[in-house]
Image 1: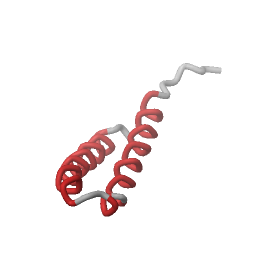
Image 2: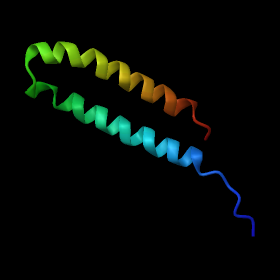
Image 3: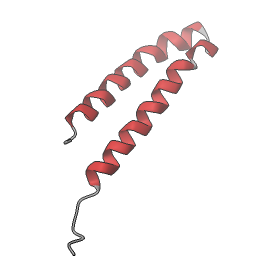
Image 4: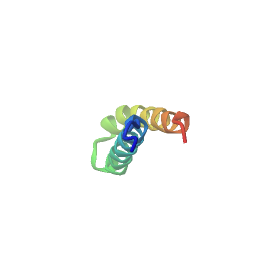
Length: 61
C-alpha cells in the first residue's frame, strides 16, 4: 500500500474555510460596535473576505 499522499491542500482548504467563517461572524456582530468602530472594521473585514475567497478559488480541486 502506498501511504505517501499530501494532506496539505486539505488542511489549507479547511483552514481557509474556518477563517472565512470567523470573518463572516465578525461582520454579523458589527452592529454591536460603535459607529466609529464599524467604519474602521467593515472595510478591513470586507478586504479580508475577498482575499480568503480568492485564496479558496485558487486552491487545486
